[in-house]
Length: 130
Image (cartoon, rainbow, N blue to C red; front, side, top):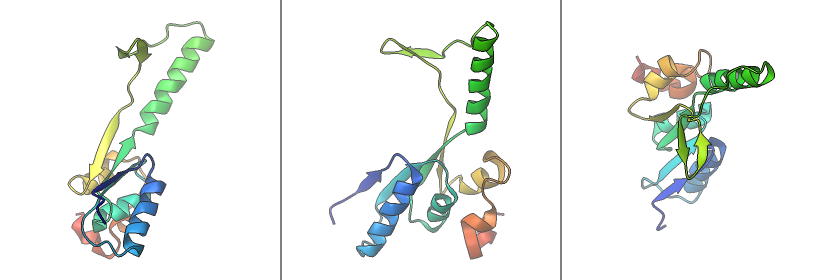
């Protein structure tokens, strides 16, 4: 009962934590976060059972990976890394933190079309995202 937070590296694990807290009867707020922006986790954010998720912009990441692969295959100019961290060249992916404050914007604007509907995320409270 002395747990304040769970930082989980994927949303399905975070959903398991949410269920375990519910099963254990822990009703006070425990900070739970995951990564992926999965529909069940977005719904948990809407109801306050999950604090946040981190969305990786997979569309731009896939496009960047395709550009790099094409450049390598065609002996073209490979896009350069954004930074060097501890001697390792790094190319950053765009990330978006999704919490209750920007959940509606994420569902209606940021996420790719068809990723999640307002009804899937807010259920009977869909009017909360207008």
